[in-house]
Length: 423
Image (cartoon, rainbow, N blue to C red; front, side, top):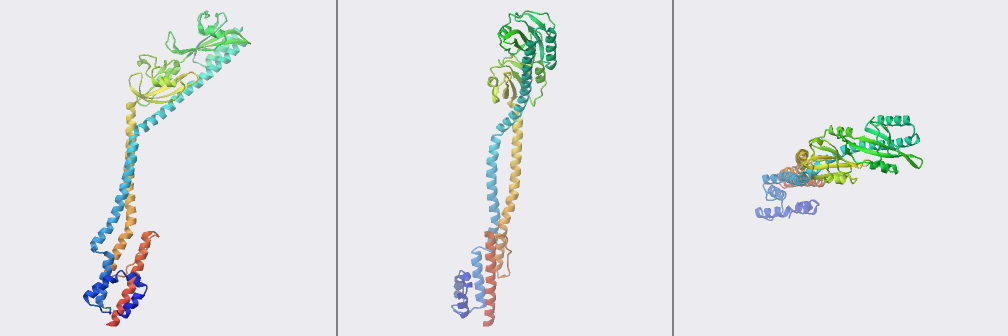
């Protein structure tokens, strides 16, 4: 072994070249024998050994192809993960689209029934308070007929839903009647008899005999001190509420109805189509009259149609407000939600493809550049240098490559100088 080879083996560069030297030595011995002098042939053999180490048994085109496949593998893996996640989430959302649509429609209908129930409840609470206050005024001036007339006239002006009112003595003889009909003796009426004993009687809703409008009668005792000195009774006409509900405009073919405490329909958007006003057998009617609000999905309504019912009670009346919406009408909302979900999935997929392509290019790009530079170095071009991009593993690999090329360049220069000296 020559002096220069022995000197090189003792240097720190030998650590880098150690994997190459066995391959070089085998080729050298096979071609020239165990001479200890470096020659130009030695240089060629060394370059071939280095090329074999860098590229293995693959050809140049095969190596390049292998590195370029990295970006495709990264993109394929990324897209597979995205497709799996989007597919599972999309399938889940599509499978519950009907529940989403039902919940959304039920929430909108709940706002409507609460608004109607709130208006009716507030109005009725004010009316009952006004009636009790009027009964107190009547007790203070019970014998003054002019004061009775003025008080009832003012009450009816403030509450137009009061259809009629009368004041009767304990004997049952009417002292005043607002409808200007002839005075009667109401002593045989059960509500009068109970009010004379000190009880306030509120009847259920019943159809007025002449107009068939829904009416409720409230009978209140008139006190003077501890004694009942008369009875005050009013008939409340809910025709205005019925007309308001009749004129309600709901999306689709939904119906809005109000039921009394007995389950009788007080108002209905399709009142003229009802075969019976008794709706107590409907599932939501039973529930709402217990004072519970909510929604019932899939029951059969009074017309034999499967519907979604949303309901809320009117506490002051003991009534309930219900919106019934055919399930067939919900299908359009379900289709809309499904379209939105599918559109979102397609958009997310397209965005994921673009993002995956960019990420794969950023990851595989430096590797491809390293592979190309390694091929050129293996061919003897030691001027290669790759700019370090980042401090991750690829950046560390780039830095190691640059150090390797620098060692090769230095060693190549030393080797050429040695050959020139020997020649």
